[in-house]
Image 1 (spheres, rainbow, N blue to C red):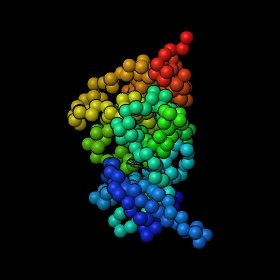
Image 2: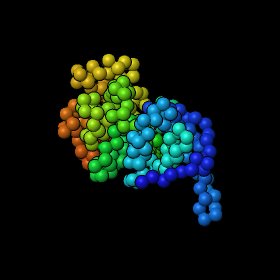
Image 3: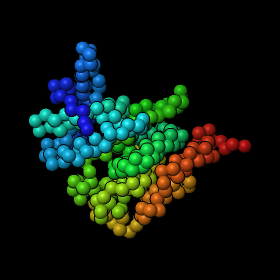
Image 4: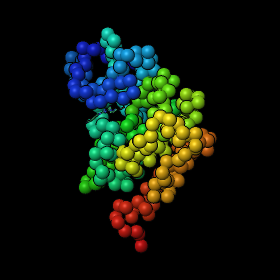
Length: 286
Ligand SMILES: N#Cc1ccc(Nc2nc(N)cc(-n3ccc(CO)n3)n2)cc1
């Protein structure tokens, strides 16, 4: 169910950092189509050699992304296996991960952030309709394809990245370190259900409206575990309606979390609300 890409058709560029058990590089792939050679810029995601046992889950995550296609889901061209290297070949998304982008550019507007939130909600709704749980929703896995800028008022465009190695194969410490993105019930079951993505959506909203600052950043793994044991909540944002939506998503009882339809409706009402107009124009409508 995968397009296999020959290693000799890949050229490697600079390293762009690393994720859980993976390294990412800029690169190119060439393919011959009716005697014409096409060169495409790609992102090469390599599974660490010392985590070879995760290769099924690494490719399973990728195959999830290639079985379905949606404008807000990352395009995976295929995989390449060469000697001990397992490589996922992804479309290169121009502006990279949203968390780094938000940290760098402190000037994105409330409407820009709401636009991104709505796109993520649509991607989750699409996955929910297919009964597919992603399992790793966070700002680091939201990729910015188009910046959108205030002057020409064209809007941002995001793509949801692959979920990466599944929770079950990650060590307990890696799962604990994903607090508060990972839903509390996952710590016991290590099972990813649709409701888990709603919890993570709440955490990601919090990140976006805190300019990419990671929630619970300073806490160690014990303190993170206690955050859940004490049924704690993230600090509420000053925009009450937004804080309410985050609180609904981050309810400890999975069945109480809102449906994606409800999340989209609530994000839409935030978009049309006075607070947004006030922040966009500096004045409230008469
Ligand atoms: N400076 C810079 C810069 C870095 C990366 C890209 N592009 C890109 N394309 C992808 N397909 C995936 C990613 N990722 C980045 C983190 C993760 C974690 O999952 N993915 N970045 C563009 C500019």
